[in-house]
Image 1 (cartoon, rainbow, N blue to C red):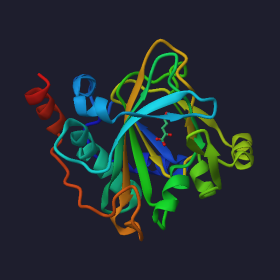
Image 2 (image 1 turned 180 degrees about the horizontal axis):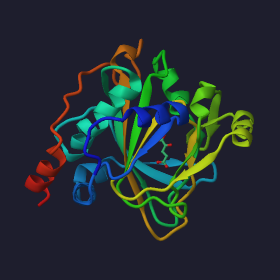
Image 3 (image 1 turned 180 degrees about the vertical axis):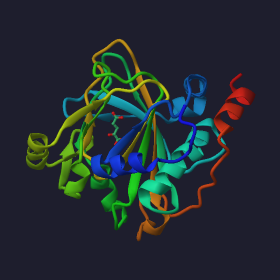
Image 4 (image 1 turned 90 degrees about the horizontal axis):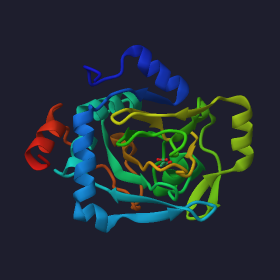
Amino acid sequence: MPSRNYFSPDELSAYARDGYFVARGLFDRDEIDKLLAFAQSDPSFAGSVYGRKDASGHETKLALWNHASDDLYSMFARSPRVVERMEQALGGEVYLYHMKMMLKEPRVGGAWEWHQDYGYWYHNGCLFPLLASCLIAVTRATRANGCLQVIRGSHLMGRIEHGKTGDQTGAAQEQVDAALARMELVYVECDPGDAILFDSNLLHRSDMNSSEDPRWSLICCYNAARNSPYKESRHPQYTPLAKVGDGAVREWGASRVG
Ligand SMILES: O=C(O)CCC(=O)C(=O)O
C-alpha cells in the first residue's frame, strides 16, 4: 500500500500531463474484501441500484449517494488517501460531489460511451472544470470485463460537445475520433484496491462486460469548494467533507463486517 496520503511531485506532474494517475494498491485486499462483502449484503444498496442503458441497449448498474455519511462506502470517500490527493489535484479544499458503486454483471453489463464527466457536470452549474474522480477497483478490472479506457492527455482539449446515446450522454464523435488519432488510448486494467484518479475533462469510456467475472468499482467524485455550483442541481453544493483517519476503513470493517 502507498505509505503516504499525497501525490509525490512526479506523480502530480504525471496527473497534470495525462489527466489521470493510477495509485496501485491504494487500498489493501482486506479493506476491499470488506467493502465487497458489505455491499453484497447491504439491503439499502440492493434497493437503490438502478440501470443505465448503453447505445446498444445493454444495461450497466449503479447506486449513487450524494453525501458521505458514516457507512463503509463513505469511509473510502472520506479517506485521506483519496481526499488529500484530490486536494492536490484541484488545488485546495474539496467536497464530495457524489459517490457511486458501479456494477457490470458478467456477460450482460453494458458499456459506457466516450464522455467527459464535465460534459455532464457543466450543466449542473459548475462554472469551472475543477472536479475530479477517484475510481477504486473493488474487483479485478480487465479488458474482458470492461475496464476503464482513457485517452491520455485529452483533458487538455477542454470541454467538448455531448449528446444523448441510449440513456447516457456521449462526447461528439468527430472530436473523439480526432483525439484517438492523436493521443494514446489506454486500457487501465486494475487489481482490487488500485485507484484511478482522473480529471473531469478526461475522455473515458468502458466496454460491456463480455466475461464471466463481475466488475465492481466505487467512484468518488469531488468538486473544489471554490467551485460550488451557482444553481441547484441533482448533485450538492458545497458541504464540508470531514476526513476520517487512515485506519477508518479497516476499523469500520472490523467492527461491522467481521
Ligand atoms: O466505470 C466505468 O466503466 C465508467 C464509469 C464512468 O464513465 C463514469 O462514471 O463517468
